[in-house]
Length: 265
Image (tube, rainbow, N blue to C red; front, side, top):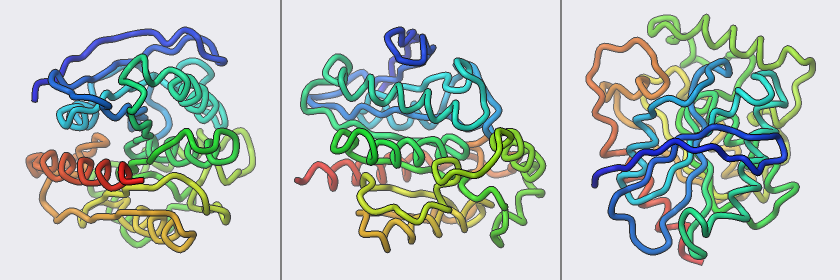
């Protein structure tokens, strides 16, 4: 399916106007999922840029909104979360304007964007119950201590220093609220169903798996999958890697299956 891309400004938000890029499958049917997608960038990237992951999700028939979530208030917690939640709240009230009244509303994110998606899901549970239908976390950057075994491989793909710097900046406002590091949250029950994806050769594999397990233990409907090595998975967050990117069909399949599962009420 071909994908149509357009830029727009979300101008009726509590935090002020936010630029966004919208990806839409050219042949989407009734009730297309509306996905609020948070890009990668180690908590530091801003701007409206192309996203191969957003395009991949749109090819399944979804409408994917990718906001420049760091620009309005800056990249230090809780600003990106507040912007993300403001956009989510807006889409919860306006989803029919993008899709229709039957459209599912989902959050998704890659790397640091996966952190923002998970934190918005927590805040949605606490302040906007029943409006969020699911969350898709793709190699979410969740552990500020960077203490897992798999993250030791980050140096080899040029990401360890960048992630350390990103965490330092993101948490520079002081403290470490559970919304800032969802893996440290002790109260996960009641959040939206989750799809968590990583890969065997992904330095963020262990924290992705650990969070998926924590969600399951809290009674959250959770699907988790680890892709085989060699699919170029870490390219989704801009790492240095030698493998060609062949992860798209697997992501499309996992996303479509997840949407079908959460559509059964």
